Picture 1 (cartoon, rainbow, N blue to C red):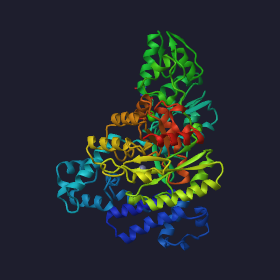
Picture 2 (picture 1 turned 90 degrees about the vertical axis):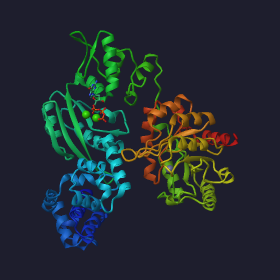
Picture 3 (picture 1 turned 45 degrees about the horizontal axis):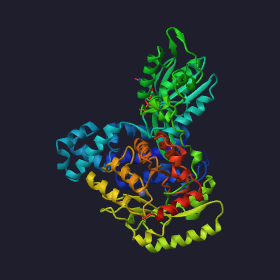
Picture 4 (picture 1 turned 60 degrees about the vertical axis):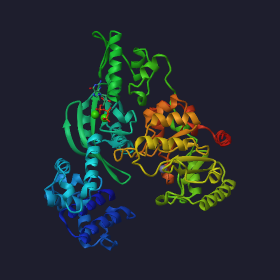
Length: 581
Ligand code: DGT
Ligand code: CA
Ligand code: CA
Ligand code: ZN
């Protein structure tokens, strides 16, 4: 067992004990030990083998024994017994916002609630609000959480799904007898969330591949195993979070591979259009073949299938039936922007506000990525929880930037700010201070509950300000967690077009906002898009790739994206914009 897995088990024990009402001293000991194990230097197995675990601060004798059992056997009977005593539904309740172990235990003790269904009913009848420690506000929040959960189902963010899918695929590729293999479905289309993994393999002999697949170390449970299709539950630790997903593996003959690849990539809507297109030409298309009566039309690749139906190759990101077939017919498909086109970024944070790294560290990390510029946009003064910069700190930062730019070679720091859009649409710095920045990202960080018309007016007013260069994270959404604030994006995009402002794609995988559907609309209206990682550390700069994926789903070419331009060009444009009043 790895450190992460041991830490998970210890955290789980702590939580289960909390649900049983154990005292905080005992439950905290498990949670603390989980943190300690995660941060232990060196090899955990070795530490156990050397008997040195007991000497680690925060791990007493009892804990040391349990960890030893976990590491050496991969199991812990104590945890399994504990799990058996607690209804699984209670554990599920913990995933709802605002419900910790104490509240879940109280709901169980007071109202006998041990499932989401029972909790929903109790909220709807008003029972929960009557209980001590709950109240109407809590009850509403719980209900909202349950409804949101029903809506999003069990989807997983792409930054979690992709590493799990890739880990499985890389191992499958090494199985003997595998000819071609690919990840299909929404993951290949780079959708921002993914429900399950669809893996496709071609081989002359499916059985041995299935046998190996269900025995991969990531596989937790086999849901079904057949001669050409198997489904499993697989899990992987991705930066400290355990990601569990269903993965389906299909094995086909190699001459069927392109058809199956196209079919299982989807989307369903795109497939339906393609099938109809085949019918219109007197052909049939399914996941195994393209055929003319009983005669099959041979295709070696997806390109061949598209060509046989009178179309150029359509990139997976475009296959949503939002006009890609029509555009293909008239040869108007965009040449999509790619990772290598990006030459710098504009929305990032440093230790001046809530970032983890210095200006210099961030700039050097950009250089390492092959970029020409690092745009720093720390928070503005009102955002005190993120240590927003008062004017004095801004001037200090400018001085440091000037100093660094004189020293650094191969990368330039550009002076920006992520300025809060205040309640009335005004900006969080004086016009005089704003004029000193090379560019301004304007963002909403407060009062998310405004009525739609007010929020739209607020953001549009900010966009009309001459100092504003671009709009940050357009709706404030957190994927699978929180809906964005209510705002009329049609109006916002129109306003951006009117005032010549840019809109950001925030590449944080929890946001990916502006949503790709609106990205497409912004492009149609000539609004330049900027792909920003909103990085708070050098590592997060790498998240830009998820923003590029959204840009591709939104049909963007290199020319539609501002930060594909080189440093000189970018500075010239920023200066030009500042002179427009
Ligand atoms: P997901 O898993 O919800 O994130 O999205 P997908 O697109 O991966 O959907 P999934 O896993 O249900 O199916 C994979 C692909 O298989 C889907 O994109 C298109 C194809 N497919 C599935 N069901 C149908 C269907 O009823 N008709 C057609 N034409 N294609 C289908
Ligand atoms: Ca899928
Ligand atoms: Ca599937
Ligand atoms: Zn922000």
